[in-house]
Length: 280
Image (cartoon, rainbow, N blue to C red; front, side, top):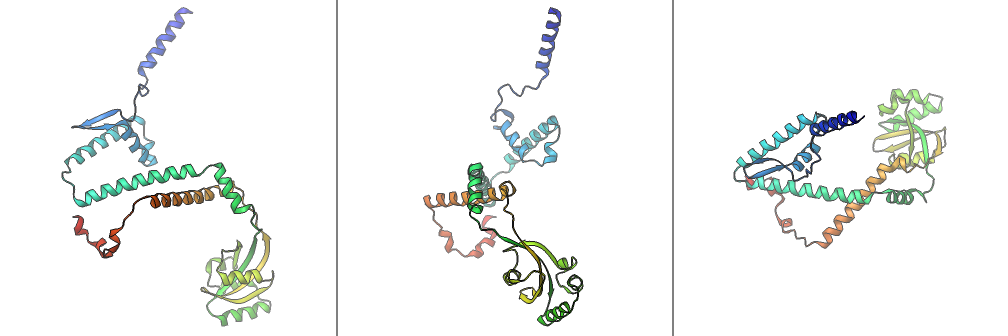
């Protein structure tokens, strides 16, 4: 038993020696390379890995480590050889810095703004007191002139098949191929004159002609129903986006209101934007 324990301890020691030593106190500041007086750090390597496309991040660790290290060294060698910066170079570097830092700030604002309580509050505000909404199942035929629409209406009143006329006559070839069917839709999804006609229509009766910017329509409402209220989970992403947008806009406004902002450039000729010789 004692012999087995000694063998086990020795085996564990071998594993410890062979294992990667990445838990020995490394940090983002750990130096992985030095080019003249400029150091390249482990943190910079990790950040570059995060920015790579997924197919590159799936490479074996040793291959990716060497590739990233070599790339950063090569970039640094080239950067040190660049010499004096032009006005364009300086402008791009500052724009990149500003854009990156503003993105960091926006990310933090968005993350802080969205939690379960905020989502529930936004959901309640949108739906808790909302009136039930109707949805409509309808079909239409779209033609170019009122005269064409009236002629088709006469045929329909005489017993012609709505779906067949839609397939052969409608300018809306998408719905026309389906016999004019538009499926179920709610308020706000159609242009106003068309929506008004749908709301006023008696199910099963062809209405029109109705003029919109697209032409002249004949409308057949099949049936109506009360729209089901979506669950919070179904619209979680949409609500989160709304919360994030509102939080970011409010935060930016607060920062701008508290900052000393001057815009002397507003009086300049806008055509100056095309004068690239200024940064050559």
